[in-house]
Length: 163
Image 1 (cartoon, rainbow, N blue to C red):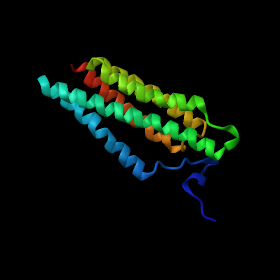
Image 2: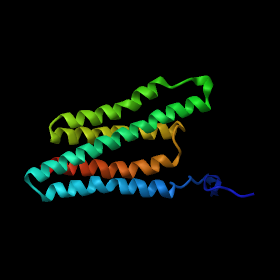
Image 3: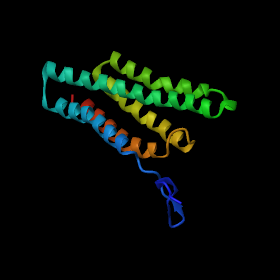
Image 4: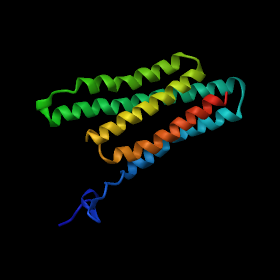
């Protein structure tokens, strides 16, 4: 009988399924604009710095919206797999908050927008962790999101305070 990594046992404890390689690579590549624009914003001045910070804000807003969409999808998937429960209206409602936070970050002063995005990413991580505990996302999702979110939040804070 063959076992998958999730079924392997190690000293009586179940080993967690590894983060899929594609998710690891794509998540890591997704950090490049955050880190690159944050570092660049420290090295340049004037209009180019403003454009760099606006680019960071826009990218952050898009990614935060994407992360919220994952929870919309989780709510829909659960309603398919457990039709007796219907759609999780609360989860659907929460899933649109990251998009609204990202959008709001684009409408305010850059410094406040970066701070708002940092808070948005941190709050979304809490939702990710809760969703993992509830089994609404794959168990490996927590191990993917935690380090990525930490890097994103640090990059946003560095850009914010480097103004």
